[in-house]
Image (cartoon, rainbow, N blue to C red; front, side, top):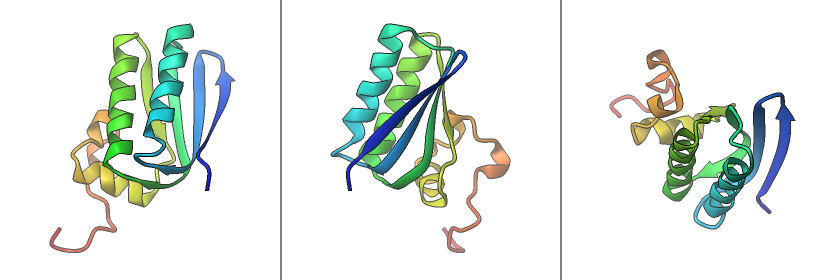
Length: 116
C-alpha cells in the first residue's frame, strides 16, 4: 500500500490527511510536508488527520515529535486528530499523548491489557 498525504486549507489551518503506514519508509514524507508548509507560509495551525493511518512505529512517532517541534519554532501549532486506538496506545506508551494536547482523562487507553 502506498503512503499518501492529502492537503486541504481551511482559513489559517492546513489539514494533512495521512493514508497508510507511518513508519521508517514514510516518516520522512510527513516531516518534509510539514517543513515545506512552514517554509512557505507558517500557517497558524497544522492538523495531521490520522484517520487512515493503519500503523505507526517509533520512527513515525519521532516524525510527529519533530513536526511538533518545528511548528512551535515557526510560531505554528501542530495538532493530531482522529487517532486510532493503536496510535493512541503507542503515544501513551511513549509518554507523548500530552505533547499533542490530549487531556489527562484520555491518558490511559481503556483497551490496554490489565496490568500494563
